[in-house]
Image (cartoon, rainbow, N blue to C red; front, side, top):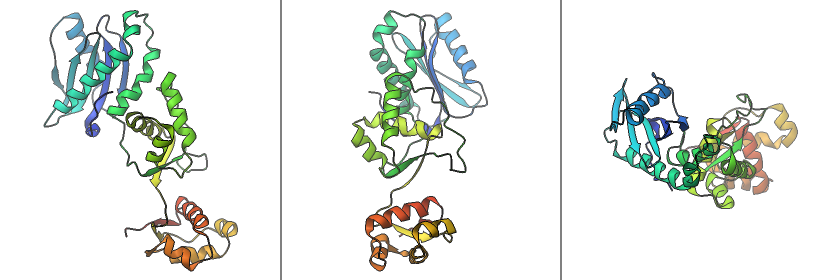
Length: 281
């Protein structure tokens, strides 16, 4: 397992390169940079591998390049300038150790095919996700009806075991379970769950919102559309008006003829439609 860090907002690029031969095995770009990270990586490799010089750190156009060497691999981590680089270096060391352990046999019988290693992105993103989410948020798969939906972007890391884990999580996303509940249901590790949730967000596969319970306070944002009134009846107008931020849904249910189960379903639909929002109470 790789050590994890909460400092991923400063991470720009992570790459693992084979020492013998200098082949890039995997590289993950997190955020835009004013320099080409692949060119930076090429420079580092030229110095370390071909000139056989020691290089653990250098600065390029305001970015810090942290370098660690393993037995078979060289790891590069490009970050913003920070006060303490040690936590980043320790995570990079852990990533290299894990990679060399998991793929020891493949590295010993190297055949030049880097595709099988793409699944290791899950381990890297478990340590440094694209973005970190609260465990109590509820993921919802993006739909064609969503205004911002532009189609499911291909996930380059969805191969081998990583693909199986990603598809398992997707199958459990129903707009009701929290991230924590999905992790518990699937039996996946925290590291895998952090990575997969980050991937689903980064590639536009899912959006995330708060879970609605009997203790949730909602407030009116707009009048319900005629379509919603047609689906749920005129009483939906009273429901919306009762959501004034001073009563939770349990209080509202006591004033209406809806059961709590039905009320929660209606409330979720109204939040998704932008009719209701979350109160601060």
